[in-house]
Length: 263
Ligand code: PGA
Image (cartoon, rainbow, N blue to C red; front, side):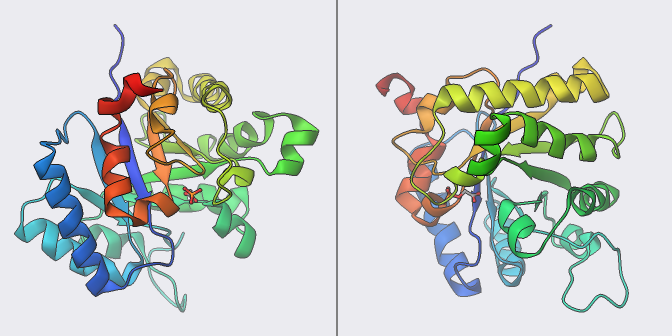
């Protein structure tokens, strides 16, 4: 039986919007989606604000009974203790976070996060009942040397080697050269790598979990190109950076079904 995966459109705010701005943003987004009669069961929506915003977002989501989900942009691989500046998955769970982004290329690049650290953080997220959004992707140099799939598949393999066969994870394929560059991968490139990632999940954890796991594309996604990605069978949503900071643009990306026929 074919498995239906609910698409996930996720907004990675990076280091933007303070806690007051986060409230205004989430309110406007919720109004925009309510006006558009958005069906959250058909397309899930999540935002990933900075840590300092999470309590404000939680309060708003709970007070207004919003169907929007949220999560953090990183977490510690440790649960508690002498780790100055780190945030435990337990704290995120206490704020009702559903998700946490792990191994974003900016963490790998600027904070030297290795594949092993990414795997430990993924295990930590699962230990605390969070759904990890595990980011993988090749640099322009990797692309030239190894082709599109080899590096993301190898990065994911380290994570797959350390999680239980029934783990609930989301994978985000984000080619580093496409992030923030305005130069998105083509939908065909994204499909090719997402399919390779799904095959690697099937090989490591079995076909059932591979069919169940959502694989997102990220890198210069905007309202004008989302529909092209979403037409492909192995692309189950998007991790959106810059375009997720504009309410109208992000809302239009979420409503990709309405412009699926326009590309
Ligand atoms: P971008 O960022 O949409 O601004 O390219 C994507 C990401 O870094 O997750």
